[in-house]
Length: 395
Image 1 (tube, rainbow, N blue to C red):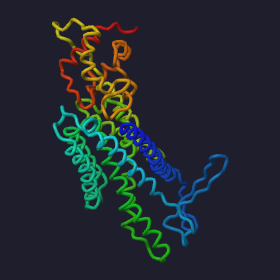
Image 2: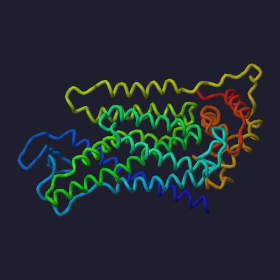
Image 3: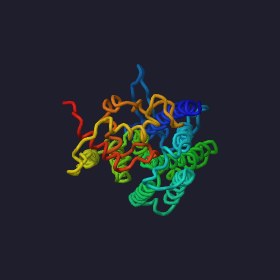
Image 4: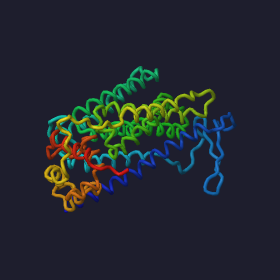
């Protein structure tokens, strides 16, 4: 019953996280789009620009003030709760999936032989430390030089990705880099952006000049949040693609895909400006294509004395000992109520029907058994590779 309730809790939290994340990132993308498409003008009333749009069978006319209107309307819409609930649901999901089952999802004994509690402390510390380092950088004199500041923030996340990949499972390392970025993003909203907006609203009501420094800091953090979005979105889906987080150089894979994401986001931000760098998008795409080529799996080269392929019957004892505690109609592992991904391995027929999936996850990416909880040896993986090599593949 506990595993059943855990599945439902995970499902509902993941759904809520997805919904609130779409709302937050969607609003961010929309306002950036508005900013890039404004018809700039100096109009009476302090209007800096306006925009006409048509959507859903109606026309919309939007105006942006240079600073603020003389008086504020009774109803003023804020965009903050989307950010707060995205982080709250994301952290709850992190606890439910990774911390609840730390032994299965958080730890990989082949990476580091640590306890579940130690792994959780490392994960939590990575989020807190990331915010502290980032905030100190943004408050330092370095904020006056955007390129140096961006380079140092990037360097921190490269270091973080490498450190986490040396402590946690690849999947958990990716997720915690994403959690660290998400923590920075929501902290930017809570501690910097919203206070600056509140000061602006208060200044209008008190008929005083807004604090320009707060506005500049909020703009800087907002821009950073915008560039963080695509790397975070990739990390959110990365747990479905073991070829990335299970790669021997997984931290570098994460860094390079994130660089491509930032490049793509930058191209969208500047593509409407005259003389923008058109090479940015092609370079980001080429980087992704290069990764696809470099990360392609290589066929396992078998030693001459290993040429004989074992039969499915000979392999089944290994499968039963190492795999079927999870991959069964009624799993014995307490974390699962059904076989993960619907992959059942209780018979030779099951094994042969799913041979390519088993080979990919056990031999190529080595992500299974999960966290290698059942202690599969290299000799057993090699046995499976020889079995797969001897199968008659469909043409």
